[in-house]
Image 1 (cartoon, rainbow, N blue to C red):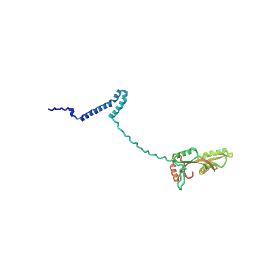
Image 2: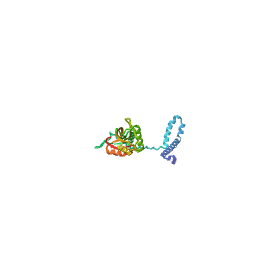
Image 3: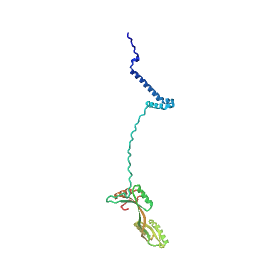
Image 4: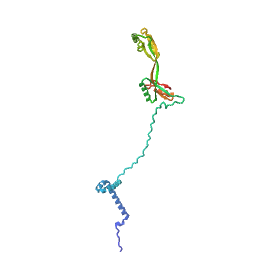
Length: 264
């Protein structure tokens, strides 16, 4: 009678399933061990001998990188080039050599004043330079004719002083009278007038006070010379440009005149 063979339960399972089960348990062990190493890695390394700490520490760092959170990689944006607008260059004031007249025209200047003292010239020059205008200063020896209102007769000193008192008492609108010595005697003078017409009017006024002021007067021309510095702005390439500038600066401080001329 044939024997009945009893097959074991383990024999019924295919070999392939056994291998799969083993791989699963190995993988699970690695996960648990890796997690333990990630959480307790520093403590485990401190328990090892010194000669193994460096090697094991490197391995633990790799495990920590595997189980740890990876930092997001931030891509840097390429630099953006910003164009900075260039400021326009400040306009440069042209000098007399750089200014050229238009065809058929000549250079013109604007005279802004005449000065006999340094302070006056400096004020005018500084004011024009603040307006960015080229300045030209020219020095002249000016000759002017004045008209002196002086007595025709010569007097002794006491008589001449009496004439001064009579003028001061009866002619309050006349300018102050003084004495001038000449050939041992004295003349009475009422000063020099730049305007001849004003001198004539004063002479007529005193003549009407006769006999309270008995004084025969005459007009004596006196030529006086003095140094004068004229301040100009320019040159300008045309008369039209010079007139335009004259209109703009006419009311500026220290400006005495705005006379346009081609010959400074």
